[in-house]
Image (cartoon, one colour):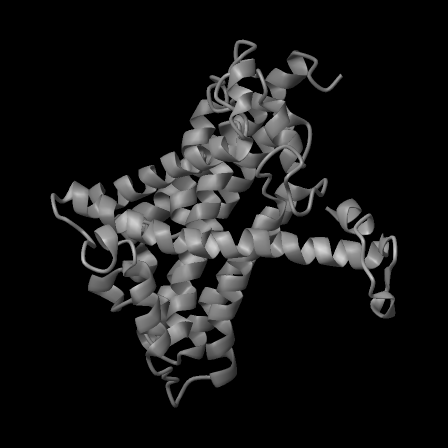
Length: 360
């Protein structure tokens, strides 16, 4: 896109644009801003729609109707809820740390958007095609805990603080096992680049199936990654940070209006991100399921969105059917089961690849 703006015809030399097109600096800046908008704006619309979709799925699981009044089939319900939240008064507790209290939801929301910069939507369709894309996602996702910790501490309230501590320990616990799982993916793909990881899955299984997840050695950790993603985003059955019967409403108890809405937007953006990572890292991303020429006529972004939708359905299905874990069960699963298994799998995968001469 930078080359497009460099070769485009403009007549505004006073801001660095030349008659034959933009200068490289202005072309790069314009292309980057447009790339951010092309990702952020549809993502915000997608968040609104998946909230509606999830409520419809929950209603179907419980044999109810779900949203069906606001707009055709209730499709405008999320926008009505957003307008209601926007018009509410923002209440800041008098005993809170006002600055940190207000900046915490901004951190959570911003971090949730930043990770999308390295997600490949199609071959070459990625905002930042950096060589360490997977490390970037790990680094950005680790920042999410700060928004929650700051919210709990700045609220100067007992239950939000308890919830923030729970959230921090939960996210850190499952990030450890996620890190070991991703090492296995990197070893097999021989790159941290997200596009490279997707392309490494082309014809990976039996020479024609585009997925790491169907590899017998990688399938178990693909399932572990899916479960860890639910815990990382504090989704049921791991929603201990918002255990209403224990903590009122968790770390956002004292929040209202748009500050509260930013947490919800950030949470669902993170859910979409984890669904996308499941698709990209283990199930071929924008590649069709089978390496067959006619299937490549379908745009890669369609295949990616279809896989995201499948994983989002799984997230909603689990939330509607699986009861909440106790906190000791949550920690036991992370530290005593997932961590040893993921660490063992690193040795297993690396040993197998060395035996096969994969790195030679």
